[in-house]
Amino acid sequence: MISEHSAGIIPFHEKSGKRTYLLLLSNLTKGVVWEFPKGLIEKGENAQSAANREFQEETGITKWEQISGFKEVLKYFYRRDSKLVAKTVTYFLAKVPSQDVTISHEARDFVWLTFAEANQRIKHKNLIKVLEHAEAFLNKS
Image (cartoon, rainbow, N blue to C red; front, side, top):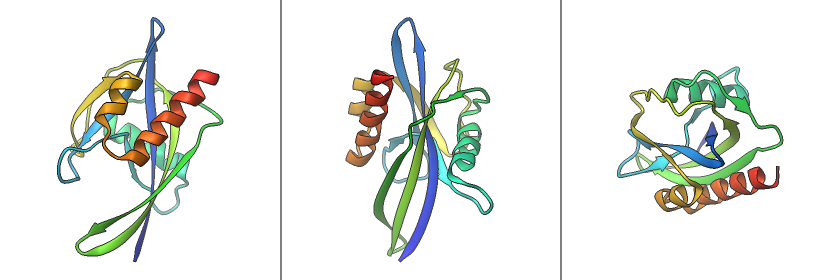
C-alpha cells in the first residue's frame, strides 16, 4: 500500500455578513470533483507550509489571514493504477480579502459558494464533514 500526505486550505470570504467558500473543479481526477485547494507535502515541508504553497499555486491568491485553532485531518483510501493508496489530508482555514482567483492547470474551474451551496456541490461525504467543521468553528468564533 502507498501512503500519501497532502495539505490544503479551506478559503472563505466575508462581505456584508455573507460568507462564501472557494471550491476548485479538479483537473486531476476523473469525473466532476469539486474540492478545496490542496496538494502533496514535499520533502522539507510541514503541513502548514505545503498548504500555503499549494493554495497560492492553485488560486493565485497571495494574501490571506490564517485562522488559528482550526486544523482538520481527513483520511481515506483510493485506487491508483490498481494500487491501494492511503491518503491523509490536513486542512487549515483562511480568510481571503478578495474573491479574485487565477486557477492553475490543476483546476478546470472555480466557484465561490455559500455553506449550503458548497454542501450540495461537494460529493465526498468526508469532505462535507470538513466543511461542516469549518463552518461550525467560524460560527462559534
